[in-house]
Image (cartoon, rainbow, N blue to C red):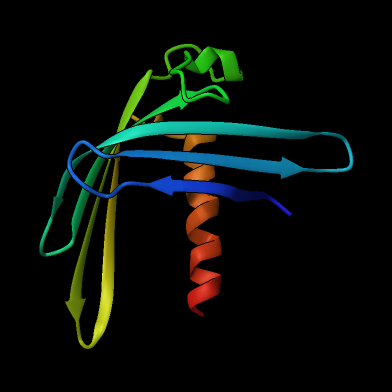
Length: 121
C-alpha cells in the first residue's frame, strides 16, 4: 500500500517548476497531497537543488497546516540531490533542508526511497 505519485511534472531547468501529486488509498480513507517548487540549480555533474511547497489542485502555495502538518513545519523546504559514479554504479546523495525529523514529510521521503530501492533491487 502506501503512497503513489500519479502526477509528476518537471521542467528541469533553473527557474523551471515541478508539480507533484501524491495519493494514498486505504480501506478507511483516501487522500492526496500536492507539491510545487522551483529548480534553483541544475548542473553537471548531476546536481539538482529545488525548493518545495505544499500547494492546492491549481498549484497555489498553501500553508502546511492546511494539510494537517504540525505547527512549526516550514512553508518551504529545500532539496539537494547529487549523483556521482562509484565503482560502475550511480550513488545518489539527497539532503532535505528544513524537513523536521520524525515528521510526516520525513516519513514520506523515506517511503519514497524504500520504494525506489525496491525497484532497483
